[in-house]
Length: 142
Image (cartoon, rainbow, N blue to C red):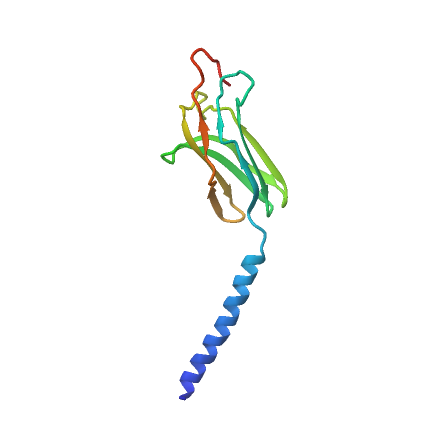
């Protein structure tokens, strides 16, 4: 075997070992979000039953969390939390009343929740969506 080929083979072996170490460290790191619970459907009609949507999540690492409700087309509808400090293992619970940032009622439909974790360098769109069911005619909502 030529000396340059043996050197290349040795470098490849060392790189493989280091890649294995990096992968193992990534697998051992705590999850960014744990115990995520999102209200599946709500009707903000003021009757005291399912009037708000709840979003709960536990952080694996400390961060400044922002949570935004997003329309199906990707537009932000309501900023619920902006840069709130949450410790590692801390529980964050926020509520959405079905209102937009402008103060009006959001239309009936399906909405997504976007969580921004700047320290972790991540923007996460939660898998579970929220279905806002239109209030009955004459209901005041909140």
